[in-house]
Every structure is written in structure tokens, then in C-alpha cells.
Length: 356
Ligand SMILES: NC(=O)c1ccc[n+]([C@@H]2O[C@H](COP(=O)([O-])OP(=O)(O)OC[C@H]3O[C@@H](n4cnc5c(N)ncnc54)[C@H](O)[C@@H]3O)[C@@H](O)[C@H]2O)c1
Image 1 (cartoon, rainbow, N blue to C red):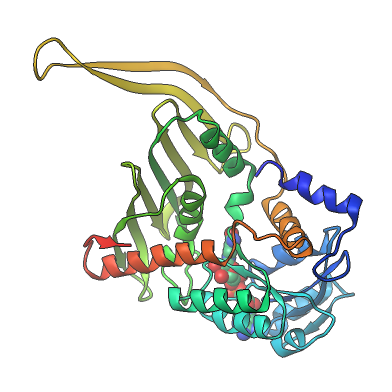
Image 2 (image 1 turned 180 degrees about the vertical axis):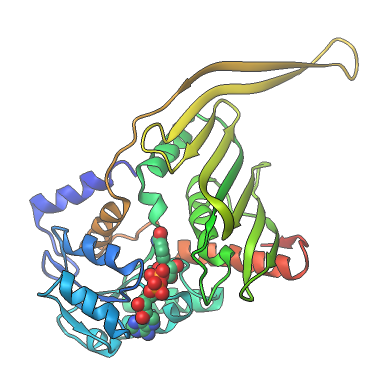
């Protein structure tokens, strides 16, 4: 992970454009609602990408886009992007239920695809898109933005270098008031962040999921709790909620050697690493346990301040130009969708264990 920025700066010096035969990836962005403007701003500000055309079926969104980017062509018809010979890659930044159709059409027209999380509405759809991209030798990247934040990159580094020791648990609280989505539950909206982070950090595939949730206002779960069982006794818990009076983004990660608290809402000391833990040894007598609590120093590692989307979209260009498979590819998107499906299944059965 730490080499991402370095890898992309390598592109600047070599000016490679192996896949597309040029050093500039021309992008068509579909969807300019809440998240789309962030994607456009970052694609447009990169050395190796340029937004060629922008599409939103809502004319008001397009008017906003035109005000911000007078030089970019806009359209209400996604076909204008899909059929343009001038466009190498399509970014799908629309609601979840539209991802499959738009991504499929883009791949069929020979375009690389950057698609929002969650990748698709079902694992069957995700698998079909992966197969289509492989057949056409095209790249799919799923926007698992958090993987590119300084915080997650640092946590991954601490984990990979053995600082945390064997992982015990991942415990996340991701709650706020709204934003209610029309097409998906709070699980499909917020949990992909944690599921993609867990997929990135925890070794081994998840074994089973237990989830509970409740619908209060618009027919989809707005409060939900999810437990994911991993090999080697690693357990994860995610609490997602659109009905919280306050916004909280706090994750605890416990390891055998160190434990950390990641508060994503603070500017400084987002991650605090604690040299705390418990050692248990057997005493002289049978059933006697010697419990030794370790309470050492706390430190807050330096975290890179680069905007995650900038790093991610730079990496997207790098993957296309140099025919690399991104680690947040369609397969990573599929693994997250499988966990979401299992959670839905468990919720329907009021918290029954669902094996993956
Ligand atoms: N990675 C992140 O951190 C993050 C954050 C927010 C949202 N998202 C994801 O981004 C996607 C969009 O979310 P949003 O909050 O921006 O939604 P939104 O409803 O605010 O915006 C979606 C836009 O897409 C347009 N649209 C819908 N269908 C279209 C079509 N067929 N053709 C052209 N335009 C179409 C709509 O008119 C709207 O302007 C979702 O998948 C969401 O999960 C990701």
C-alpha cells in the first residue's frame, strides 16, 4: 500500500500508456449526485486522467456540473458515454441498483470500469461482470475508498509488520442521522466500508455471519448489527445506524501484542496504538489462572494526509496503463457483496448463523 503514490509517480517519469497506447486515460462519469462531484474533481485533477464527458439523467445535476466544469461535455444519456470512441473508462457513480446494467454496458463497449461500492446488487451480477471483464481483458475497480485513506494504510502496515500480533477482533461503530437511501438498507450503504477494510486486513476468508436489524421508517433496515466469524478465532462486529443522534466513526482493533482505536472524525491522532493486553498462564493448582494485565505506552503514529480518492484514482490509471490487477478489483467487490447477501439472509431469519 505504501508504494501506491510512488508507483504512480513512476508513471510520470516513464509516461507509459501501455494499455491504451497513451499516457492519458479519458473518463466518462455517470452520476453527479452526492458522491459524483468528488469523483469528477479527483479524476479531473490527475496527471493521467481527464474527464471527457459527464452524464446524469437529472438536468439540475448536469447544470451544477456545467457550472463547475464548463469545458466538460455533459449529457443525460449514458449511451453518449458508452458509445464514444474517445472514452477509455467509465465511472459508475449512481445508485446501487443501476451498477450492474451500466457497468455491463460499459464493459460490452470495451471500456474499463470504476464502479461505486457496493459493486452490484447480487453476487450473481458481480460474478457476471467479473467474467465479462476477464473475457474482454478490461479492468474493474470497485470504489472501496477507505482502503486508500492514510488511516487504513497505516493500520494495514501495523498489522502486516506484526506490530499488532495475531488479530483477536475488529469492532466498528459507524452511525449517524441519515442519509436514508431509497434502494438499499443501512447494511448495504454503510457496512461495505468495514467489510472492505476487513477483507483487506484480515487474513483468511470469512466463515459465517450473524446479523440482526430493524426497519422503522422506509421499508429497509435503518439499524443493524453484524458479526462476522473469520478463521483463527478472529471475530468482527459492525454496528451501522441511520437513526443515531450523533455521528460516530470509531473502530477498535485488538491484537495479541497491541490494540488500537481509530477515530476517523478527529483531525489529529486518528489512530492511537495501545501497548495493552492480557497474558494468562496456568497456576500451580489445577484450575488456577494467573492473569497478567499489561498496561504500557500509547502512541499515535503519523498518518499520510493525501485525499483517499486521489490516491485511488491515480492507482486506477496506473492499473489500466500498466495492465495490473487492482487489489480492489471485481473479486474484492464480490467478496463484500457475498457478506452483504449473507447478512440479509441472517436478518430475515432473525439472526440465524449463515455460513459463507
Ligand atoms: N465510496 C464512498 O465513500 C461513497 C460515498 C457516498 C456514496 N457512495 C456510492 O456512490 C453511489 C451514488 O451515491 P450518491 O449518494 O451519490 O447517490 P445520489 O442519489 O446522490 O446520486 C446519484 C446520481 O445518479 C444519477 N443517476 C441515477 N441513475 C442514472 C442513470 N441511469 N443514468 C444517469 N444518471 C443516473 C441521479 O440522477 C443522481 O444525480 C452509490 O453506489 C453509493 O453507495 C460511495
